[in-house]
Length: 356
Length: 113
Image 1 (cartoon, rainbow over the protein chains, first blue to last red):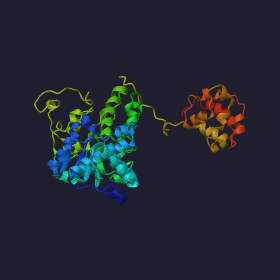
Image 2 (cartoon, one colour):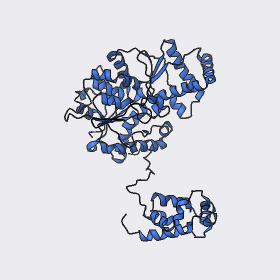
Image 3 (tube, rainbow over the protein chains, first blue to last red):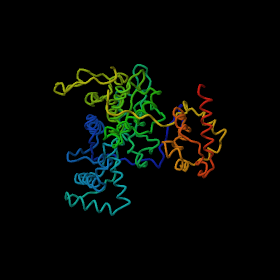
Image 4 (tube, rainbow over the protein chains, first blue to last red):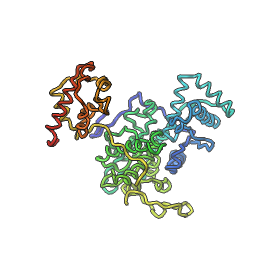
């Protein structure tokens, strides 16, 4: 650890440095993200293609990785391996070697499966046979597998050069305090697959610092958000899920963060939704001045600093109102257009929780 | 609003509100409690436990976690037969522990934490 200007900078240990491909990515979407935060994946593709000039292939034939089913004991390991093998086959057919996953669960699955194949080559041969028999396809194991937050992390300084709205409070001139939350399956299962490992994961906090913000280190920083599939799928068990998030919120509350940034679909969803639930259930709010804390995905945050329209990023789909954070950043927005389609048609209405 | 579920209260010990007075009193006069290895022999052989839901290990857990609200009800189930002393592999005088808890509950009943 280096101390510079009273700021602690954690250097990434060489054991936890990750190789991330530069260009030519095969993109694997997330099932749940497209429903929860539909703007994020579009923003990612736009940033990569238009702002960074990268080649990324978004394949409509791609399917779920079945990770949720696997972690809920519904889908057997052989089945998920074959599904993943099909994804790799699509990548191979399109001439790509670098695989990027939008979902942390999927990313964990791809790593778990390729690691299994490394240690058990007979398993790889078995899956090749299953895929050939079921679909007639053949595949190559990707040269590089990365999570999409790794790609934004790698290009954070290129984004910082084009920055339009830094993460600075326009009224006070101070950096905005952002809590980073890393999905468990990103680096807790295979610490060498996450930049900085499981303990000092750099992927999100490096983005925040590069874009002018300040990160918050709080006691329960590495605690799970509570998504855990079995904890959420059955309604009666959701108290377990809620309790995890509550523990985190109570721990971060004294630091009065301005926003939370996550790299996992489940974490974004639950850190956002459970704030609304805790407010409705017990009247508890965990932000400064009894407010709720807006939650962003890393693509939304990147989109905001690059000057994308907040409604194009899908911020109106959040449960917690993001507008107080946009005001702090000095971003101009039109609240009347919040729930209007491109054609000007009202697509629904909802009063986001926060100012209520 | 009823969501069909609720947050679960944490079981972690909060050192700021942890009431360790009874535990300290018991250990002061019966230090053998410190060598307990939680084998559960006392609980398995307990006469009172055979007839009621008395559980020596639960009693000790409540004591060690500072959860003293229901401790009185719990120890009242003990009939002080002393079979737990006979089976304890570490020689913990559990009968004395129960008696000391009874005394401590009286001493600290009306005292501020």
